[in-house]
Structure formats: structure tokens, C-alpha cells
Length: 146
Image 1 (spheres, rainbow, N blue to C red):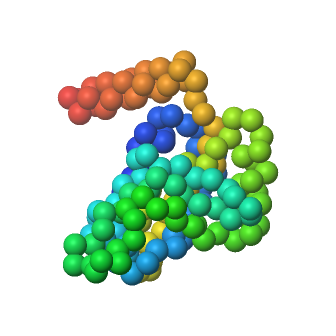
Image 2: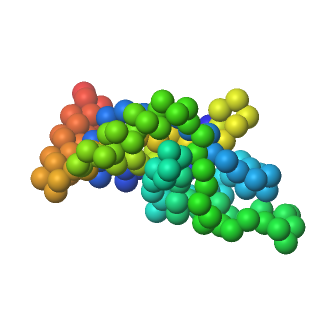
């Protein structure tokens, strides 16, 4: 079950490799995330000292929580194996690669984040993507009419 998505990532980047990461959350954040009060549209991912973090992810504070609710946009640690973090770090150190969040979903009762190793698109690539979408849409319309 997808709780939040980032459709813009597929438009702005060529997705090369996907990973599923756990998110280090506190109790009230989990309840709020499961309620769907989460957004990853403005978020980005950084590797700092061999650990991977998501910054800018918004989880609205749980309404029935206490005064100790955590900050809405705090930096949250992602849980990945060291080998995966090393692989990501090697690629990101190359020019043109970045790590983008794709979606937040539930997996076996846990809140997980799908991240991707991506390469940025140029403006002409984006125009090409839009043109392909238009052609596919026209073909589907013609197929429905027949």
C-alpha cells in the first residue's frame, strides 16, 4: 500500500537502480505515516559519514500525540546495508548521479521508502518524454475507438 509518491522523480530523472530502505521513525510518526499524512515531494537524500539520511520529508504530527511530538521536517536516518550504501556512494560521487525518493509504502507492517539511483534529465530529454506520452495516449484512444 503506497502512502506517498513522487511522480516528479520519473519526469526529472532517468531511474537506473531501485532500493527499499527502512526509515527510523518514532512512535507517533508511524501512526501519522500510516494515516497517510506524509509527503516526500520536496525531500532529498544525502550520504553523510557512511550513513544515509532523508531531508525535507514531511510527516504531520499525530493529532492525539503528546507535547513531545517530533519536528515535522526533521532529518530521518534510512536503514540500508553497508554494502548498498557503499554502492550508492560510489555512484553518487560520479558526475550526474543522485539519489531520489520514489515512494513511501507499507511492507509487512513496516513503513518503507523506495529510493532510486538516478541520472538527471536535460530539457530536451523531458520534451522527448512528453512527446512519447502523447503518442502512447493517442494510440490508446484509437484502440478504444475500434
